[in-house]
Structures are given as C-alpha cells and as structure tokens.
Image 1 (cartoon, helix red, strand yellow):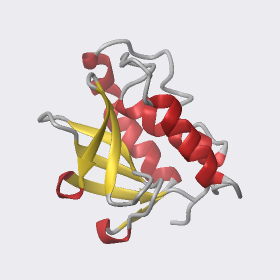
Image 2 (tube, one colour):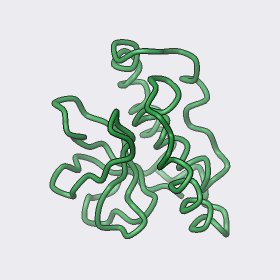
Image 3 (cartoon, one colour):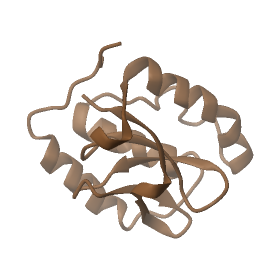
Image 4 (cartoon, helix red, strand yellow):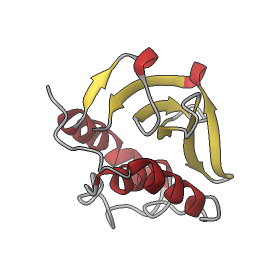
Length: 137
C-alpha cells in the first residue's frame, strides 16, 4: 500500500507552529484529545483532514472508544504502516499514553519521543510505549 497523502514543502514549520499552538489547548473529548491532536498535526503537514468523519461524533471517552477502531482502520487505509525503528518526525503512532487504553500520537519534533494530547495537556511518550506507526507522506 502506498501513502495517499503527501507532506507540503514547508511541513516542518507548519508542524512546529501546530505543536506550539497545542501547548495551551485544553483537553476536550472530540475537540482536543489524542486522536484530534494527531489528526490536526497531520492536517498541518499535509492539508488533509483524516478526522473529518469523526468530528462532532463523540463528546466523551465512551464515544471515543466506539470510534477508535474506525480511526485506526482509516489510518491504515490512508497511510503506510512502517516498522517502529523507521519512525520519523510527524509520523502517526498508536501508543500507550499513560493509561491502559491505547492512544494516537505523533512522533515529536526531535524524533525521539511522541507527542500526545491528554487531560494533563500535551505530553511526551517514550519510544518504549510505541505500539505501531504509520508514515505520514
């Protein structure tokens, strides 16, 4: 399977600006949670909104859990799965984000950790917690 979306030429600056803006965002299910943060990062780098079908579809954790498998399927249809060791800045991750539930994150700006939205704000996730990765463009 090939990647169906591409990063724009100035994606590093766009991703950095998105991450800076997300640092002050307040967690809210369906608006600024792990999936919406990751989708926003991808949108900033590519202009493609992978979460368009999920926006407005949930407002709590239970609703998010109901849509999570569909979100993973959407990522797998659109993005190329790669080995964890080949993850690079801006790639999409499935991770353990500090709870027993999986979450979505992006590879951080330095490539050595992931960034994930949580009820504590934007948090860093160590590589040891990464479960699966998809190449973003």
